[in-house]
Amino acid sequence: MLIHSTRRWLAGLGVAGAFVAAAAIPASAAPAASAAPAENLDLYANNVIVASGGIEKWVTLFSLTTERQPGDYTVKVDRSKIDGFADVESSGENCTESGAILTCKVEDQDDDGSYLNLVSLVVHAKAGAKPDQKGELSFTVTPDGKSGSASYSSTVETGEGVDLATNESLELKGAPGATLKAPFQVTNRGEVPAKDAVLYVVGADGFQPSKRYENCEYAEGLLHDFEFACRLDATIGKNGSFRLDDSFGFTVPTDTWAPNTFGGFSIWFTPADWDEYRSMAELPAKLGPNGTEGELKLEPVMNLRSRQTDVNPLDNSTWVDLQVTGDQRADVAARGATVTGAVGATVGLAVGYVNNGPAAVNTGGSESPWIGTTVTLPKGVTAVRAPENCFDSEDDAWEPGKPGARVYRCFVDGSIKKGEKVDYEFQVRIDQAGDQAGEVRLRTGHEETEIKDLNPANDVAKILVNATGGNGGGDGGSLPITGQSTGLIAGLGALLLAAGVGGYLVAKRRRTRFVA
Image (tube, rainbow, N blue to C red; front, side, top):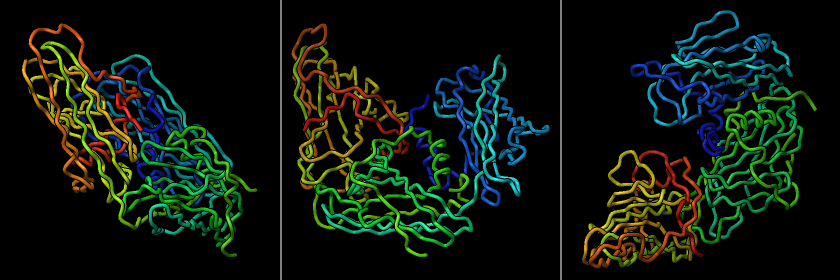
């Protein structure tokens, strides 16, 4: 199964856009190959709630397995249980209809290890459809040339249509340590009163909530430095507007790099639409623990029904821009190493950097640096083991932890505060006698832009290998591998973009040691 953070990313590419856009079925493909067995498909499709007069929404069936092989598939979609209240149509050209059954041919293009979009369907409520109707959309997938099939069902239901709206943007400004009020506001532009609301917020490191409320769930995500969702009790009548109470705001961390700019994003959901989004992103039952600092409330700005869905969710979101004022940067210093061993011995080699502060780095701001580390090993050694957040600079596939390279690009996710050290731990075999040298070089930048730290002179450090004659015949040397092992994750590529590298792999801290 795909991990929650990856599924969340699939749905979170555009929170509002997820309601109205989905990838198309491949129109053409490479020559057919043997499809994966049905039991390996690991199917997943999202649930939707629609309203008469509201926008169309999408149900997309994915195969989430990375074990599949290229091949063709037949997908049958049974619409009979929702035919009385909702219309379902294919977004592609490779489907045929026979009564309530859609039959779609899917041509698989390649096997790149990513998820496979099997079929995308457009769903909208029939004219006059009443709320509180629910049924299953059933999928059956049969790999061509294989026996057996796999099935999955998603839920389609109708709700009462409301129309929540909010401001398109919000600008905040403050120095490190400042607490900034954030007057998020929601308006009901529809004819039907909206019962309750959910506010979902994601953002970079600078957007730390000033308080953590009992009716909000908080998490530290892999794609964003934080995220939280608050369930708010209020009935918002026609043309009524509410905003968060005055206690809500963000506190800029005291060690934020300044000047800087951070981006954040918020969106208002009806409770039913929030449940739908959680299905699309397969969020956990709770984002994280609730706060303990009282209840966050909605207060009226101006002047219990069926489950409700927003008929126009495209105007529910706010882009939040936080400008951090002041002058506060950091000095990151490369850390080299010296190892000694006999020819033929395998020794541990730990290199990296330390943040001398005062500001934190890797915080996600547009004017603060992500730290990329280039490790060039001496010519007389061979890497027999490399950290999984280091990549062969000559390998276009960017295979994590690939042994045998001479030059590695290394990255770590998460902010690095003053005094914290990052070690990338290798095991190298000594192949030649004599003294040999390599280097550790830091890149302090963001995407294609170089951002200098306080002391660029210490951004390079030496790697020295003192090789003695003879055959060590086994492991030995100094700096043993002691880092933690927590696995490789897929996510947005801010760290690789910092080195000017495309793609979206972000290596989590595996065999990477942090020392305060």
